[in-house]
Image 1: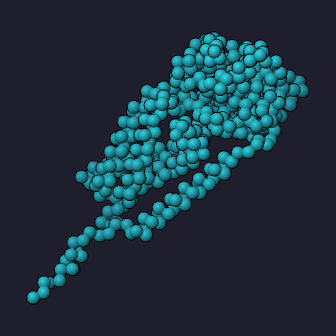
Image 2 (image 1 turned 135 degrees about the vertical axis):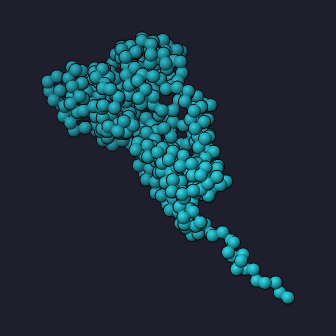
Image 3 (image 1 turned 120 degrees about the vertical axis):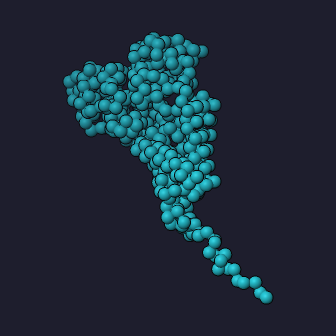
Length: 147
Length: 252
């Protein structure tokens, strides 16, 4: 059980860390992509787009270290739910996200990828749920510090 | 007889406490402080106001686009066509190849009022700043020399493989190819070197974002967007010389 918890922690943690670093390296694009969801107002979307990568990096580091696992899993799971709602919402409204310029070689952007995005996020959400229910995991700082 | 005191036994079986309330509270407080600082920073950075700085001749003073063929007299009820693009965007080049010629012809004859809004996000996305900025600045410099349309054509024709980006020497080459010569070319080159319109480039890109544009190319005909992902959009980008059909459809 605690080994499964470790796996869940690492899958979710590494994903958050990698996603956060990638987004933090191109904040301008991250802000624009956040605006492209047309959910938040211009300013709010920019604020969220600027902060989100660093929140993701923080969650990633905490999960990988296994520090305050349950609290991080609750917040990380809520963020996943927000992503799933966001993607479903643009999908339903027929909005195509991404400029369609990046490595696309003349192919037009489509909405085909949305179902895979949602599937991926649901999988990650399950990892978070597991950790909320069973936060005690192998090789965690929580265990080393507090038993 | 009183029962034996079990408090020690009970204490021994009680699990150790997790992180203290103080630690959790401290972390939450730290996170909130970071969020507030970022929020203030972003709002400040986005503070708008009237644009102040050098404005290219054919551009609006509030940095909301630059007219192609600014001296052409428009026909009555000529629709306004706003095109948002980034000189580094390969899909914008698809639009240029498929319909650039027809769009420019309509602008030159005064059938449409063509307004370019140059964006620069790809230099962030591709990590090659200031590649998009110098290209946009180049268009503005060329427009001052009366060769905006020619420069636009030359720049797209010389678009490198995605990610390679533009060098200042490329921009100067496009100016020459656009037919800028003599004293005008000297002026153009200095405008490119100095980045005369860099502030205007940034303001234009910011205004595009505020107008809700989140990708390129984005085309508006009389304010109506040819939606990305729609059949019309694909037609415009992939089928040669379909511009006038789409134009007619959106101005009906």
